[in-house]
Amino acid sequence: MTNAAHLLQCSDKEASICSLNNSHIHCHPADGALKCDKEGNQLLHSLSPKTLPNSKDGVTYNIINERISATALERFKDMKASARIDSSKCTLESTIATGCYACGAGAQLEYICTTEFGIQKAHVECNTITLEATCTSERTVRSTQIYTQKSNLEEQCTIRCPSSTTTGHLYGSLYFIDTTNK
Image (tube, rainbow, N blue to C red; front, side, top):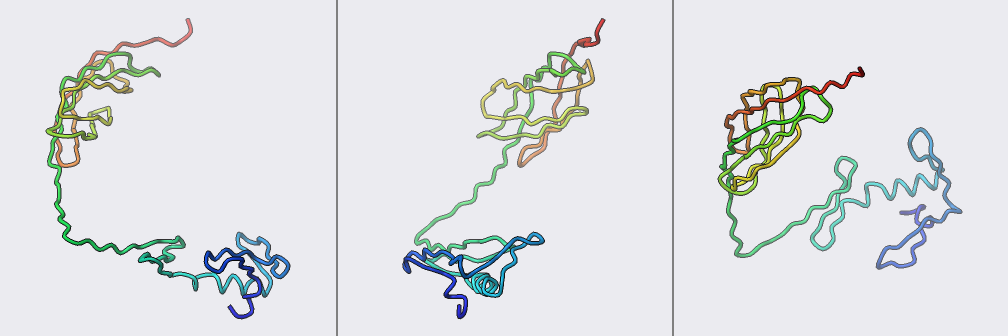
């Protein structure tokens, strides 16, 4: 930082707490960028990519795609690692839809979605309805809102869990609510 060094005033060398000397630098916004006089450009040029990459305490700081990135190198001794593969499949059962069709409130779908262990999120895609279901190892009744234009539901569904795809059915008889003024 030859000529630009006098533009910075640092009060604490250890903590690198510095500020710009405003009386020596003149910048203004233009065309979506910062435009400076000769001394300001020298300062910006000396501060830009030359300050990074920088390593401190085993962490390397760098600019990647105009963002600052930190990379830490960790060393472990006598560490053991294991891989867990989730091969659990989801099963959708006992689906009952009640409520209205072609209405703003929608219908209430009660379902039981089971899996062998843990909690899984399943993507359920039927003929005319798509929803996300929560599947657990317990047979817990859950509910969600669905919106459809059909009064009688007999939907063939595909249930996708992280590691498997199964099929199921969705049933229900919904009623119509007349919202026109009489």
